[in-house]
Image 1 (spheres, helix red, strand yellow):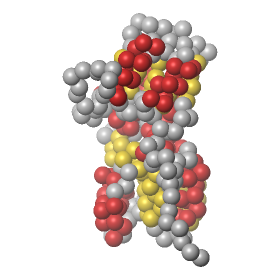
Image 2 (cartoon, rainbow, N blue to C red; image 1 turned 90 degrees about the vertical axis):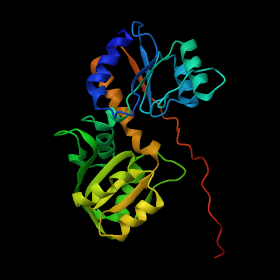
Image 3 (cartoon, rainbow, N blue to C red; image 1 turned 60 degrees about the vertical axis):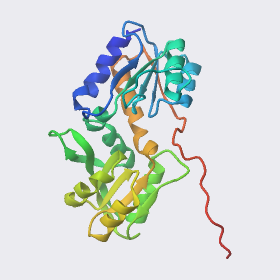
Length: 271
């Protein structure tokens, strides 16, 4: 079985740390690079549920998209939420490695995985930092389809969540070219509009930016949950490790829904 250091090298090659934003916290959070690893859990969020799953599966490594310790801390006492997770992982012999905005910008990266899940052929980055790297992707469908059909396509491509998938636009508008951005993407609304795409798929769209965007000619909007938009990346990252360590490492993609929204309801209407 490979040492953790070799697995880190493979992940760093696929998702170079230098692509991470200056404010980000990526790389090894806890764990000994010299320790051997034969089981890995890949997930979006390093939270109680996924740490539980790693312990249950006997994994020695969690590869997560979101950082556990994004902002500076002065300690990790076990009576705090994040400190408790660090202590649980160390006691169980589990390392944690995070690939965040470096995985967003890498090629292929988070938005490539989202585009592939939807059925898009990727053409270029939405907000490029290089020829093929950068935030978001612009792609196209094999042929145009009505917006209502496209919204359903997105819903069927991503894991189910309580909030579901929302669309903003004329139901019969033809959709062929699409911009996507895994995670919170309303800061790229202008880039999607400038790209001239028919639709933009992202997460965490806010009321005012979305409303102002729709008031001007631009792409229709598809809003999904943050977790769902980034979950396809887990299989991509798993593929990186499977190709590098075929037969030597057991790799599992977590299907535990760590989206925070657990209840959906609406006001009853009398018919």
